[in-house]
Length: 230
Image 1 (cartoon, rainbow, N blue to C red):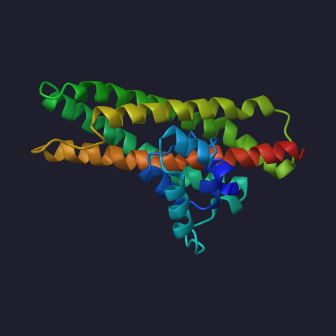
Image 2 (spheres, rainbow, N blue to C red):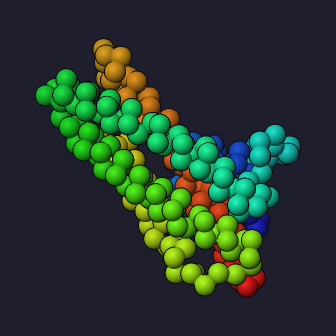
């Protein structure tokens, strides 16, 4: 059997991020579900493994132009995550909350799912803001300290398992939002706010997948390696 079939999804994406788009197209979870092997992930989604392998081979035959995140230091990767993904989340969530509330008020009587979606967006905001505050205030500085000094005393304060659980929770909220919105497909004749709301949700989910992947499958793997090297 080809060894890539037994390789974890997260590791495959960490080696070449272009594979993320293949997995997304097949409905295969690569961020929170990144510890499953390719064979397991395909089986769980009833996806043709050979077709996935074929597309991976086609997509990765040339070295990517995009950054190879797994080659970066943990500290550099943390700065990238904060400056790109954390900043993005902090900018987009207030806008999403505004749109969610407005669209629910105007169209909720006709589309009651919008009322539940509004509550979920508020929940997502609380989840993500608390999560990023924890990372920026505690976990990330400790990871940088670990990389610089080669050891730390405050291992329990890294909170890796807790952060991974919070990633799962945010992913579950996004999955429910996607389901309630018919895969972010707005109805015919939807107003501009309705359309922008669903398009922004779709964009936010794409960013969240990459954000969580970089932490779960790249950064936290580096932390494990640093801890083992103590």
